[in-house]
Image 1 (spheres, rainbow, N blue to C red):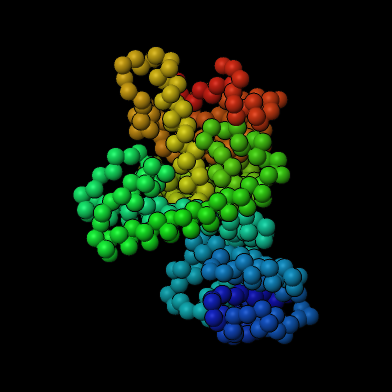
Image 2 (image 1 turned 120 degrees about the vertical axis):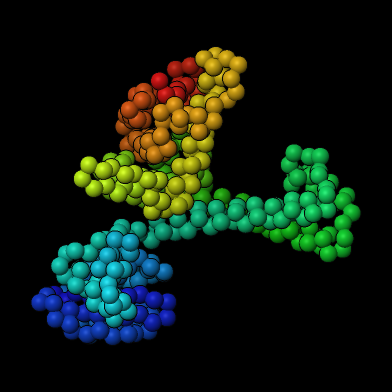
Length: 372
């Protein structure tokens, strides 16, 4: 058996190979490309080989190449590879050799190699989210430009039909007017690309049976559902919702020793797009809680409850976020979910159709997410 460590880079990569006794067979820098790497792997055959590499820039094509060649691939988690990050001497040759040694001793902290279909789904939803952020920045530039000239439009949505008419009536200096028109043109172009991306997303997920469990959850629409499904991939690889939350970086960090227990903010390690989807879900959950509190009359005369007030009442930020994850994962797996130690049991009426859940037909379908 030959164990290979590859320190993958954009232009040139370092490849180190050791045998089962730990002796170095080669440590060479090669041009990063399928043909060059395949030629190097062929030099080490017919002995069985395994390859370890870090989850770095552009690793997808390399994982696909190894799968095509029938070579077992192991993707190392960069944050967990302490032997590399804390080494006294760190360069490409040492990094590649360390990866090979960790693979040989079965000490390599591995990450999940998402299949090509999952990676393509992630690319689609992430590109759509990136375009939305670009459009938001362009709109912010228009607001800033009008503010510099002391213009306060008397319209709720500046980019509605009425708002566009007002923008065409403003008399601005020549350069400011040209910049305004440039931003408007870019907004139109980006909006068109967003519409195209959303159509592709809906086309891709329309036959996914898991949508029947996700869409009934308040705050989850087709785009958020597609983000959750693409970022998680195969949810069955997580033994529990807590493990999913830890993978997504939603659990608090901990630095404890002996009797001293210290927990901090959530680790934020993992998919930031998945955490964004959870935050959107939580916003709706809090809004639902505020609406229920106002309609129940339990807080007559008080305004709607903010997320901070709910957290102060005993619902910590981390437990609430974990509840949102449990809610989605439990809906996929058809499980009963317990929110936290101060929350009620929640059981979905799984015999109902998704349409009835989205549009509740009676009081029995109302979710109560308030703390007791």
